[in-house]
Image 1: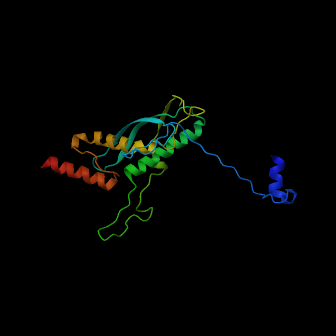
Image 2: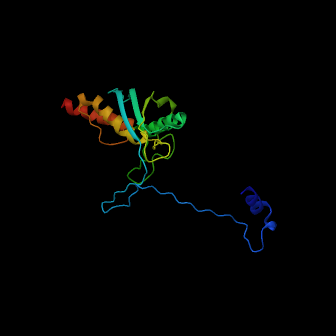
Image 3: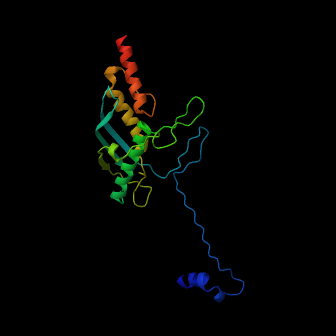
Length: 203
């Protein structure tokens, strides 16, 4: 194989007359649990799935609408973990993506269609100073469908954190009657919700 590759790349003159120097290989992968899209637009497009459970406790300052994450615990089942350092990075990255989507990131336009959040002065994103301490734990139920028993994990917290923090903030603001029904909970939007709830209670 080494000799053939060398001839095809460096010494094509040594090939027999009429033989093209190109090398080509075709391979196809499939898995038995894959299903085509059904009439209700459902599909199983993955060989295996990871699982995640998260719990978060927050404090909300009713005067400033500042949210403080008091505790955040995330538990993942990614089957067999091959590289713990990469896994931890994926969890932290996913959590920050989720926090950004839940608390800050929004494309805003005015009534005339003028884009209002076109720079990082206006389009807020979480930075290292907003990153909470994350308590990470793992369960491992290896997948029988993969060679090493591993499952997916890539940035999975990005999907769960918005719901987790919205529920935690709703719980913290229950005495005021505030219920989060819209994301992102930008500081100004949350402050207005608290103010309106207080005015309603006062009337």
